[in-house]
Image (cartoon, one colour):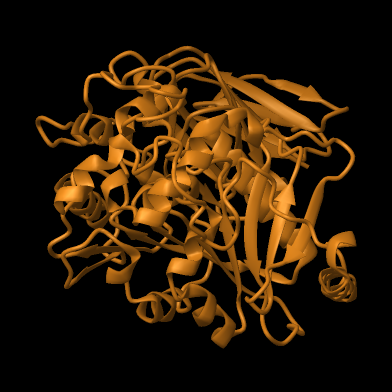
Length: 508
């Protein structure tokens, strides 16, 4: 991490660049919404996009209906050509400029994110340069808006008053529903800010509304690598936490006017979802499930038992917020189902029902949210029922799947005092690697692995950070063996049985 002085020099450079006009200030590129919400003018068809005509009768049936007139007009920029958002520069990783009229607000343009999409985000810096790490609040925008949606809230003023940083990512595009490209971009933005500025990684908080609430909850559940930026607590304001339920519930005109007169116009929410995820929920269920937090059946109202990323939030305090008369009834259904699901896991989660009859940020009390968030610090559990959807690091474990395109559940616990690791109820697991040094697991004397594979495919359990091989290995008290790799400093055993078996590795 760079020293604080280097970070302050960066801010000084940005101030200088902004004061020098065109040489240092970088204007928002075409194809991406500007940082400051503006009315971009009349759409090409001379009026409001016909896809939003339902809002004219005062009824809110869709996320699109909840957009203001200016925001609906602004959607034209997102409909012209998505390719204009693709990163084009390989020379500069990022550029930054101060936003006119908003003291301390910086707009970043980040290239080469790893997703193929350019990322834009806003960062509000504290009015007084921090002398030590301070909290960061990350605000996820609603459907059809962009990183400037944070200006529709009072979060910038709240974080300035508290001396926090506030980050508002675009997530690759205005209508992303937390898809993998948006999550890659969001992670790139978080990593950059955490590298450049004195962020307290134990107090990174999130708030999201509607589409953004669902995107935030899923992002928090999917990003559990201790080496990365993780959320200490989150606030979901009426979020779309089940994308298959959203697809089923949102109105669709059966594609009668899709892409008329221009490609990308008049697409309803189901069309956008199908474009993002490659088909309908029945055709590609995993793609919807992996970017949802609960998998809510739109007919029966049940939550899928093996497809619920919400289980990964058990250790992350979650404030669920909703207006009592929000007109998007189906999002209310999701919100209450999500709250009930969370409460069953951990009574520390909280539900707030506010007064209001609009689907908007305005029904949220930003002061109350920040007051609640600031009481939380990052927690790393010593056990849990974790769901992985791809190879990667999940807590102190590196997961390698048997096959991509499916979930890998595993139940685990680490007892550093007893020097014991339990791993069970695994499926679609090729290898699980245990970060012993990171977990504080001392490899001396007897170290116990209790293993069980639910699908009996032969799970490889590998311990990382093994300086010398064990002197003896037993399985259920009978002499057994594993594989020591001196180059990678690992020791691996293979368990093929669904019953729980006890491996004891005796180290010097």
